[in-house]
Image (tube, rainbow, N blue to C red; front, top):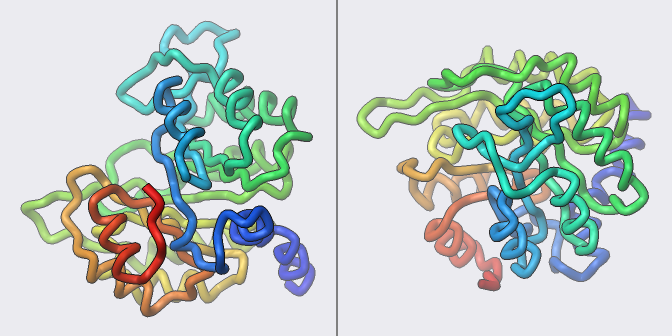
Length: 276
């Protein structure tokens, strides 16, 4: 495993080192990274490019007309159309110094998207994260993306990209919501232990506190692993939940892609400057 660790040293540069080197953050702390979420349509993408965000996240799918030659577009289901193709999106983003996170809801869009990324490979000297939910998680009922072909396709084009591999989840305000179980984290580790790339696990903020021991166990399995905490629009969770994560996990190993106003409150509570 020493070769893996060595390989990863070059790759940590991906996020924290990259933004440190460009003087866009001040310390190796995942909480310093600012996210812009769902920059799919041209208006959102332009806003994201003008913003102080470091990482721009967007969703890629094939349009609903289903024609064989259709180009990947930027939309989040249930939307299936967009005013932005992945090609146009990439052309705009590579003129900036921002990192890229592409979220795939289906396997079909992955290969055509990787071909487009490959065309701009020399301009991608920046963090590139490729995301899919590959396992069923707490209360999850949406379809998973088949892990092996997803990972194999991405790796065949980009052996050193950062994988963002998650679980499908749900959250219900009127129920007790189970967290990430031991079975779920062990299944994920079984898939990821064979990889050489850095892997971040997107986990839902409202489900993290009840899963602290499971997620700590998972992160201790490799120095290639990190968490990305995200939030659903109507999720109910507290700043204390986030501070609990902050206290128990290595600051280098946790990123926070959370919505306002909690994002602002959380950053204030931990003393990270917020540029709005």
